[in-house]
Structures are given as C-alpha cells and as structure tokens.
Length: 83
Image (cartoon, rainbow, N blue to C red; front, side):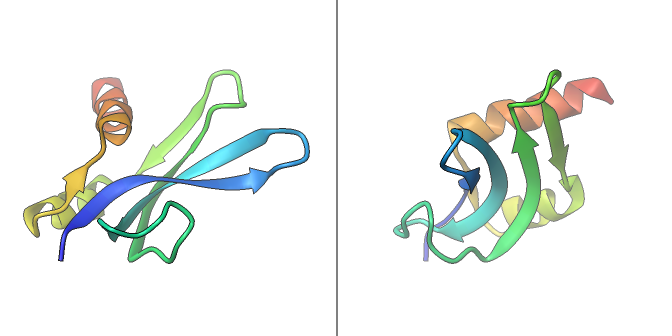
C-alpha cells in the first residue's frame, strides 16, 4: 500500500478561509477521505501564517516508507529552518 503525507483542506467554504491539516493517507484516496494520522496543521489566512508539525511522528512515517507531497516538503523545510 502506497502511503502519502499531504494536505487535507478543512474550514469554512462560505468565506473561502481554509485551513489545512498535514495528514498521512493511502496514496490512491481522495483529498477529503479518511486519514491514517494527523501530523500537523497549516493556517495561511493568519498573518504570519501558522504552521505546526509533529516532527517525531513525521519521521516515524517517513521511515515506514511514506512519501511527502512537494507542498508538504516545503512547509516542513520551513519549520526546520526556524529551529
């Protein structure tokens, strides 16, 4: 089973202010389907944007063979640079 780490859109559709979760999902599932784990969240509507990632769980999933999407990879690199 192919496993991906990607963004899942959550939040209000009426005012177009979305938040995103960084989740682990089966590779062939849709963006809104059930996730295996939640690794963090991203809120781009705030100034500055709020980004939180559980690096310990993220590394665990990467060791098990999960693949990050390009967007999640850039967000994770952003949090590593802040430390």
